Amino acid sequence: MARNLQLGIESNWSLQYSNSFSAVIFTDQEGNPVYTKITEIKPLTVFDKPIIAVSINTAVPVGRIWNYAGYIRRTVTTAFGESFVGEPENLFLGKFNLIVFDDLNIDYFVALQVPKWFKNANIAIYQYEGIDRTTLEDDVQAIKTSLGI
Image 1 (cartoon, helix red, strand yellow):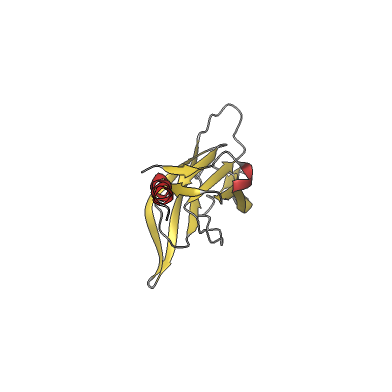
Image 2: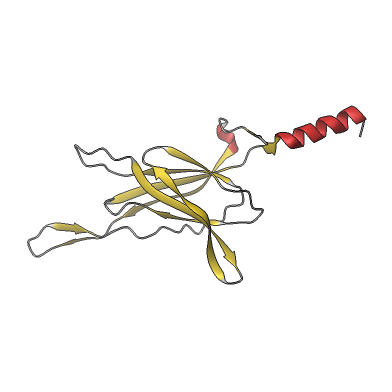
């Protein structure tokens, strides 16, 4: 069963979260900078639609080619606390990663982890607010129309 979506219309997207993170820097005994890993990022944003777009950017060192930007997981609050739902989704660096979660009619949160070598990360998460119907709904409506219901 196919879905009717209008992903290419900018007004169908709503920025839900945007933030920048930096690794903590300290110096070792020789005076060289040492960067700590950026911890898991858990935006305090509630999402209520199954389609989001995630963008992660960082400063890539000269001469390096980085494509991997970490992963995202969906979490829900249950009677037993926070629970992960589904498998983690890999993210690409410098791209809008379209994430389509299994459609549970439940609000959820996300948790992101960037690679340990990132010294900084700029994150933006948009939620799809546009039309999200299946072709089955269109077929049922066409049948109702032809029957005069």
